[in-house]
Image (cartoon, rainbow, N blue to C red; front, side, top):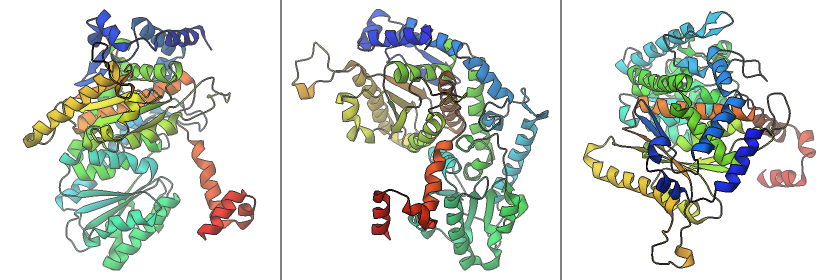
Length: 518
């Protein structure tokens, strides 16, 4: 450990029990000093035990670990995914006209724009009825079949942006459990439904099994014209062609886009179809806005850097092993699940880029639920539990339901009050409560506020979290862009299903359970 790391460890031990509210007493301008804004998005981290000296030390840690250089390497197209020898360029999917990105001597943003244009033409054709179902009638529904990054991003975005959905309704199937696709298709008319099969290699067992079920459903209804009801997001054109999908309906992407970072390109086709190309462009513009802030803003105004430094402080120095994502926005209900994959698959690593064991804790446990539902479930633990869980609140100034703004005012009041209550607890001048009614307070939180959940704002939010994950991984010295941890269980699942000899070598527990479930 370096001197800066040791200093932060000692600092945390000295100050983490210090009442956060006292920092406001000492500095009336604390909110202004420990919050930052960019393009209408506000990040407030003043309700944490970070003071000016701690923030300076955290910024020095980022400098010492070369965060800025690693950031620049990512944006410029260098192969920072060292274990797989790949560039990491999800940021190139929201291209900046003023910033070419060169990979092997080629500006990849040219291909990105061409791909977006093809997607837009297909999406607009579906939406205006130029591209029709097998009977010449317009589509009313689209089903995206994928898993992981090919499902969570589009599903989260479509729920978040439901006020912008018109003409074609999106649906999502991911789980290999037949109940998922059965329940989804049961409510749809195959004559009016387009199915998108999203699998980069077109070999993902969950996706292809569900796709087989969907194709059989289409064939029963439309016969040999089922191809008119299919599209794919894949790079395996030989496999998609054999599946009966026309080449002009196959949208591929490069290996420098990781699955959990792929919302912005062809994987987002279902989103573009649902909200329209113009709103999808706004989504990309919001992400680009956050990219620009991350690339160019000074440390005191750099939202992703500040957000990550708070996370590092809580995880590595205060010893808080999880973070609760609490969107006070019902349409962000899938954001915690999306961030579980983004954060835990990226930074749940035990070795550094050079193969040595990491020296401290890496990725925290990410979980959450929309407010105010969570208040009636797990906030008991947040307020009075023996574990301290830093909370991340998200709240909009305005809802999309003008006639129900009074309900939104109640929602906002609850969000602000919960963050305040977590911090202040039961005040000393309150009547002395019984022990079970005492709130110790001093529970830290961050609040992200914005005017309204629009495509632009959603783009900002997701890119903010992407870059937070990047900074934390850069400080830990890990590769945030591979995911070998998902492979062992998948291999063993095939052995359980298909290899009696391998099954015989498994534990008595697994053999006993298999026999019971046979």
